Image 1: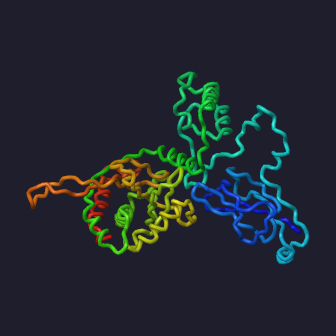
Image 2: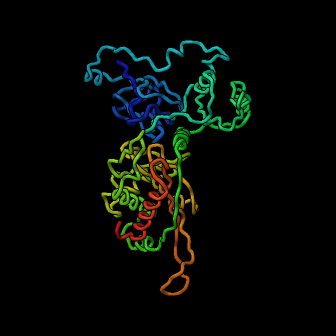
Image 3: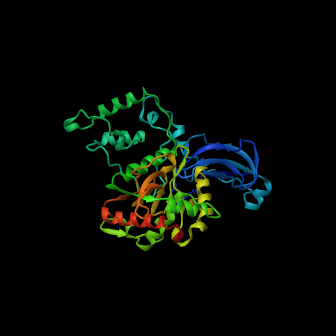
Length: 402
C-alpha cells in the first residue's frame, strides 16, 4: 500500500516552524482521515497536525520538544486499499526525503562544528517585524558566525565585558563566557518565552516613553454592578481606547521611513498571562461594537489565550495593546509596546483613597486607579500622548457612553 507523508502544515501566515509537544498516536495505530495525530506548539498557540489519509501509522520521524519547519515530513501513513484507489495511488509514489536525512547520513566528528551545532534553533520567527540585533557592536565575522551557530543575539552579550581594544569583545572573551555559562544551572526556555524575549528586544530599539494619570473608577464599578453581564475593567479600557483612536487614528500610526502609516481598522489586543509567557489575542474593530456586545467575544479570547489555543485569525495585526497589570496588585508599570505597535495602555489596581468633595466641603472615599500609556516617542510627543490618555480616562468615567 502507498505511504502518504504527514507534512508539517502552514499554521499561520507568519509561522515558519513548530515544536512537537505531544504525540496522540503511535506507530501501528489505525487512523481516519483528518484525525489528530500530534500537537505542535508555535510561538502563538498549540495546534494539531491531522492525518492526510485513512490508514495505519507506518512511521513517525519526530521527537518530542524538537522543532520542525513548515513542509517537513513528520512521518508516513500507509493508506488503506480503498483510500489508495480513491486517490489514484495504486502504485507506490516516491517518498519525500525527510528534512535532515542528508546530514543524518554523515557521521558527526566529536568537537566539530557540526557536532556543536544545536539540532533545534530557538523559535523566534513568526512575528510581524524582522529581527535585527542591535546590542553589542564591533563583532568580527568569526564572532557573528559563532553566535549564529549557537542561536544567540548581540543583546545576549550585554553583560559581557570585552578585553579587546576599546572594550571590544573578542572571540576568547566569548568562549570563556560560554564555558562559564555551562557551569551554571540551565533550563530550556519555551518557544513562547524566546518569542516574547525577541519581541521585547526589538521593541526596545525604539525610544519608548510613558505618561500616566489617575482615573476615578466609581462610575465604572457602579455601571458594571448594574450590567446583566459583567465586563472586566480591562474591557472598559479596550472600548475607551478604541473609541479614542477611532476619533483620531494618528497616535496609533507607525513610522516607516519618513511616512506615518495610519491603521486601516481599530483592532485592539489584550495582554493575557499564559504559561511561560504572554499571549495577545485581538478584538477586531473594537470601535464598532458596544461594550456589552464585546463581553462574550472578549471572554472567549481570554480563555483561548490562557489555553494557548488561539486561532490565527485572532492574532497579529493589532494597532495597540491593553494590559491590566492591576490583576497582579501593581499600581504603576511601564509596559513596552509590541514591535509592530506604537501604543500600549496599562491599567493599575484600584485603591480606596480620600478625595476632597467641594460640594460637601469634606474628604470622601473614592476608588482610583492609575492609567499609563507607553508609546513610541518617534511618533508621539508627550502632549499628544497626554491628550489621548485624557480622552481614554474621560470615556472610562462615562461608562454609559461605551
